[in-house]
Length: 175
Ligand code: IMP
Image: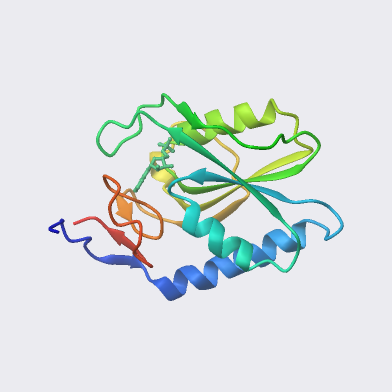
């Protein structure tokens, strides 16, 4: 199968693993072991991040999944968001962390936080592996950020371009 080369490595696999372990420890330290912790993974891009994040935690945690479509135009978000798959479980009274792959304009996350907040979680925080602050169109609170990157379209470690490259263990700039 031919496909465009995924270009230069921006963040290596070992660097990702080390940072995600750190994030797992930080989250663990922020939530007393006696309290519940419920992670909401945004499909599909965050599946690998979630898998490593929960394996880095030595505490009980539950997970659920949702899928959104951001009506993307090419490689940029249009700001309109559609719920493709809802959560299996309610959030009322729970400590919830949204687990997302990348924060770009922030429009998708802003929408997501709004709909999840309406479900009355006890606390709601957000963990993003990557953030492109220069692209932000809306101020959105994100408590845990793995890496801050420049305005480049990146793939790998769950992130795709036209459904390709999700299996790369590193983050690469599409070239
Ligand atoms: P936002 O609404 O502009 O913040 O877009 C967020 C979504 O756009 C992410 O969840 C990704 O699905 C997608 N996205 C934004 N930038 C990239 C990128 O560099 N690579 C892959 N997907 C991206």
